[in-house]
Length: 487
Image (tube, rainbow, N blue to C red; front, side, top):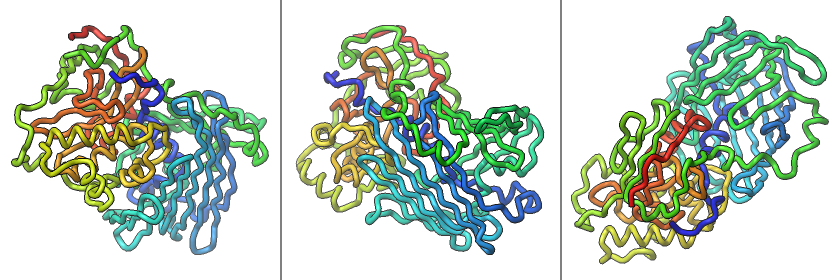
């Protein structure tokens, strides 16, 4: 394996777990409650609110949230600003999030605007409901992609999922499922909310009897305590994340300069043995526990039987040019959201990397090597976008892998993203890489310049960001034991 510092290996957990669950809580993913909550159970005229909350990670303050909800007679307006300092791979980054929008008199969403700014990248999503469609524009301002989502029911925002549960008047140990829309993956997912026994908690110097609710999303658990009027007083989530209601003065003071504990290392998994030369291994056997039912460990170079995973290094096919790609494989030649393989800038870059006379294997190796050498390995808090990565020439493994997909597809080579764990310096870190089709699926890692990737790359999911959401339920639960290394 290349001699690379551990901290360049970027866990996609921060984007698709910590970050996603936080955004659910920050009211960006609006619950669709029209078919669940009868109109007489929703507040007929919600009061205007101005709320501040501190954000903590393992007891250290890392940011704050300021929410404003305004009742404007025939419609409602919401505005929310978030500031956080996030430590990833030893680098602290400032993250600023703005969410605002308008609601119809029946509390259905009319329009919204979401803007995320980090040290290096910016992401914007804005949308408007027109009849039974949600018209979306997502990406970097000035180069956004338009999409339309068919809606069976108008999305609603009854505050957030806990407000929705509160107004269904759930009894103790009862639960409801809600649909949420994710504009990053352009998909809908189900989230289950259960009410537990009431608890007394300290808030702003007072002891308050609160209703407790917990949400289960893809196996990841988040809990909240609500006051008698339905206001959220406290929340807890994965990786030590929590939020507590405070005064405006308390929200503006006391953020820890270094931000949170390094989330990349916090979520990593200790190895029971030292693996000295991963790139020389032909295969490896690992006992795995705590993976749940949504992950994809079996298939291609991986074999999973009775809790034991065997990963075998691939051999490249004898033929190096493939003219007859199966139809189901050819689907991975098409452009996709944030994988703009048909963009002129992407195509132009590919034409400069490869030659017309190159075999498919030569094309793949040149692209893998170009990404490895030209994309600076830097932690990024944003939504991976191939075109923006090409322009900025920086990013972590998410940025490397999404750009690699776009370049390979533009070169006529089917490609996908894979995500899971990789061994580095006595631990397994969350990581993303690629798989490309050369007569059969072959792994590749542009962070390490490997084709095929070494056998310590443990695939847990394959596919785009929709599939990668399945990782969330595994974070903090997986246990590994290396049983055998074969050279």
